[in-house]
Image 1 (tube, helix red, strand yellow):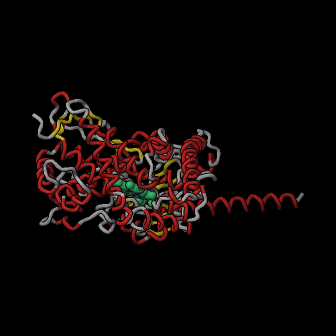
Image 2 (spheres, rainbow, N blue to C red):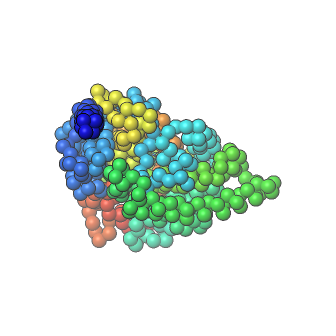
Image 3 (cartoon, helix red, strand yellow):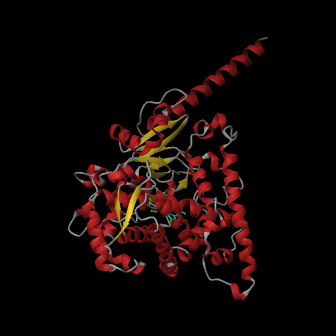
Amino acid sequence: MADILILTLTLTLTLLSLCLLLLFLSNSHKTKLPPGPKPWPILGNLPDLLPHRRRLHRFLSDLSRLHGPLLTLHRGSSPIFVASTPASASAVLRTHDRSLCGRHVPAAFRFPAYTPSTFIWSTTLDERWKSVRSLCKSELFSSKALDAGSAERERLAARMVEGVRGRAGARVDVRESVVKVVYRMVGEMVLSADVLERAPFLREQVARAMELAVAPNLEDLWPRVFGGLDLQGMRRETAEQLERMYRVWDVMIDERRRAVEDEATKKQDFFAAVLRSGFDDARIKALFSDLFAAGVDTTTASIEWTLSELVKNAFAMAQVKQELDAVVGKDNQVRESHLPELAYLNACIKESLRLHPPVPLLLPHQSEEEDCEVMGHVIPKGCGVMVNVWAIGRDPDAWGHSPDEFCPERFINHHDECGVDFKGSHFKFLPFGSGRRACMGMPLGHRMIQLLVASLVHNFNWGLPDGGMADQLDMDDWFELTLERKRPLVLIPSEVGAC
Ligand code: HEM
């Protein structure tokens, strides 16, 4: 009897001590987390976050003004962290880049047929990630590779202009016109093929995959309870979408392998370099899907936002048109060789990327291996870290008065910001991120934006339907991994020179 009593007492004491230890450990963690709004039991900050899901960049910007440059939020039981000033962005992306360069992968994208092969969602920078990055850098995004694709992009831009010309005087949804040509441009670079002919559903599949990456998922919110269960079927659906894309890549890879054996049809392009690289098929297919997912909506959104700003700002539009007339010539087609000479257009593109960064919170980072101490706070390993580049681009301390105004002149010669670029070393301007995980498609994205905006502006005058006042153009936005216009940009083109 005494034995049983002692045993029970020992067990109770051990359990109690364990509970106290766990409580102590979790509290000691909590006290070092960055500050943030008080979480609700179990739900964390979800009751505040969910209603602002589509305006998350704005909501987080307001919160950071209350709680500081690095803040904690609890999505259910999972803490996430947000850096919202140039200094905290620099701490995350430069000082602690080595630790925080892992990707925090949404649960819907974690499954064996994809995770080990993807580039974008690679949790660590292992040899696989490095070899893909280095292949893309030299064979896809180098100046040599980009110059080799110039004529094809110019041909596609001319085709877009013809399409718009055919609709002169009618309503044109700019996004619809632009997104197709961007798909084709990326398709020509990556596959040397008309991707919309080969994969007509690619656009819908990518769009749905994006939705699944940001939609609230019980597995992400309460991983200890729902982890691995896929109760909402989101992982299953992502896998199905990818599977459909992969079927197209399978056919194309197969065709290419057969063509490689035939000297006459052998091409020296990116596709050939990928096949020579020795990557297995799973990696090749994931890479193709990753490039379209990362490259098309971002570039399209930038073009739509830049044209919106130009339509809204008549003075800037007139300046760009004047510059194009001088550099390109009234009756000539814009060529990529003209682009470096278009200083004012480039200032407008930068200003648009500052005000409307297409990936406003970057893709979530994390530390894979260990907790990381940032600005005196602890970021536990495995927790997501976002950088609010939208808030940073409008930070009055960084950009002076009127940071919300479209003023391309700020990037021109005599102004303070004239030397500021988006290559990742100026932490107040990070539309492409910075550090190891920065966008690697920036050189291609930038060329496409310049060429397509220049072509649209050089060939057409743009007005609002129903006699709408251009300076009143609505600029409301909508967050879904990329920052879109809430309402599409619908304009009426008229040909330049036409009465
Ligand atoms: C305006 C156009 C673009 C913008 C604003 C943009 C922006 C970004 C941003 C913010 C990131 C994440 C950086 C981070 O998490 O720290 C990213 C990643 C990436 N981007 Fe872009 N991007 C653009 C165009 C492109 C294009 C055209 C491609 C390729 C065709 C591309 C390929 C990628 C890839 C592969 C990654 C993942 C890099 C990694 O995880 O290591 N992007 N991009």
